[in-house]
Image (tube, rainbow, N blue to C red; front, side):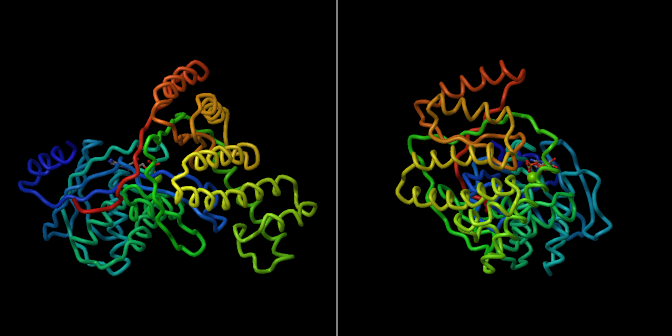
Length: 381
Ligand code: ADP
Ligand code: MG
């Protein structure tokens, strides 16, 4: 469908066809606020993504058509050529970051479209970056490895889009593989694939469609608490570089030395690092009930210890419990956005029906529902 539309429009705009590439948005099953503590995250690419037809044309300008915005942009490849449209800055940034890494790329024509909801926490921006990073690397023979392509996307956000993000989103959309989640150690960058193919269950996101303003100042405060706790632990255990290195017992040793708030924050992080490992063990046994229980524990921690949930998300989480959903938790930084839910197929309709009804009654607007299946990341079609 999307492929055909893109092909047709490419022909219409540019007179022939190019090659087709795609990438994906992502979810993170568990491992929240662990990245900046050197812990694990556990993302996977999803069956919502972005597709682009691209053809190098021997020029030194990019001619790009966004189907979703119904807009055209043309720009050069030098630093001063940054386009005006925000969506085009992502493509421009990817080009610049590849060039900075020694890639020799030239002009090209492209038409692209996607189905990752924008700004919903599924990382439509990473889908866009990794599609173009992967494609341009192939088409122009730049020889960058997948990790470097993820870095290209991350640096694009930092340097051309004003978003100081970590590496998880771009990593997931570059490395994503069907029916697999990827455990990434944010300290060493080691990663490992685990099977995720929950037969008889569905993975569904419920988007509260709220974003509370506290998010960025609270985020900085959480980071500070983690650093305080780490520094206190390090006085007894000098080998502790980041909070994820600390044992639970070591945190207890310093309880009296740090503000209770910092203790609770650290308690959450240390617990969360362990939960990721427990979920990985459970997945190797195909034990999705344990996976789900860990998701609830994470939600509890994010809500009561780390305090980054909000009324809407706690409401959705309680509702999930009531409807016998296997696992449910807030996904992402918090203060709004989605819950991610693992639910038995036979309970799905009742849960979603109830969630939409009750949420709308209470908050005056409907949540959005996104079914997701773990799928391949960046690739040539
Ligand atoms: P998200 O959480 O979805 O990544 P962001 O704000 O980081 O939200 O990125 C969304 C931005 O990425 C959009 O405003 C747009 O500029 C760009 N983008 C993502 N998907 C598309 C698309 N399909 N077409 C055009 N631009 C897109
Ligand atoms: Mg984004």
